Image (tube, rainbow, N blue to C red; front, side, top):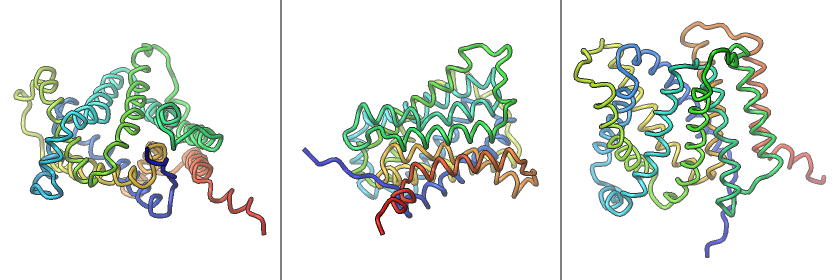
Length: 305
């Protein structure tokens, strides 16, 4: 039996995690443009299938891609369901009744669920005070960042709140399940997952959205869809599985805490949106949570001279 691996957030892992947070934070821009012209399930299908196609073209069968797909197709199918098809669908359904702010807060519970699941299902990512404290600080920062108006639950049905939480729980299970792909190159794992989730979403989009009735979207929407597929999804999931291989499942799930501040900062830089005091306070709380989770600062202070 292999010894438990000691997962830590190295400087390299932090750099990749921040980069992934920026990329997935930017996906809100692309989705905001595209969803005005393309129905949600069809947009999910386009995002996943175009990303999978791009990775197939890029790899051209290298890194034993097709052999890995044949050997692990069941695992990729379950990973695609847990990490793409199911949570995306749950979030979209929930957002028919709740706003994006509340959905972002509920999605930011992913690290908490991941910590709990990892404690029960793994030998090397057990629960600790630092993990719980850091996750709660990050969640509090997300709530401050989004604002109290996002928590207004008047006339919101309970099921609409439960669905995004269920999506976060699905992400937690997916992050733990993804540990089994550590021996595969990240680009192969990303391609397998996206190929499987595209197959799952195809009948859903056909039955629910009937995309043949959709007109051709404008060039801006097409560009947004391509950016969403190729940058935020294809490259984003390569980074995701690379981080998981070197930093573990719990640390990888922290990216959901980095996405909201990334979206706020990108809005300030590229859209001229002004940063409020609550934005800065929320980002400070998230930063404190990440420092606690990292642990190196406290270890350095506690080390004897």
